[in-house]
Image (cartoon, rainbow, N blue to C red; front, side):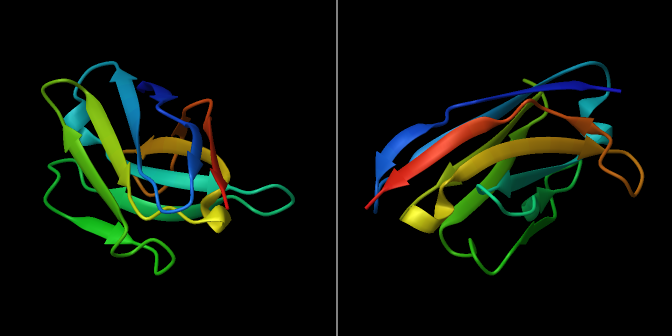
Length: 117
């Protein structure tokens, strides 16, 4: 398994940008697909974007499509989430998670993103 640590969260005004990072420790990180999830207060945790182990395949939920970009640098064991045109409804705790099979079983501790109107 890999261990994951998120960073880059903070407070930003609506329309602004943030870049989150997910740092992985462990071997063969390129063998893991990675997803970013978010959980707003009082709501369920939701998957918003994923990237394959090679980085060649990505998925975006409709709520972030066109505004967020996921990428990875396997040489550095990093996955990034570039978030542009942020909205107050993007306020949440953001988690990265990794999987080799069908289940995300490696999770970071989360990083808070707050978007003010």
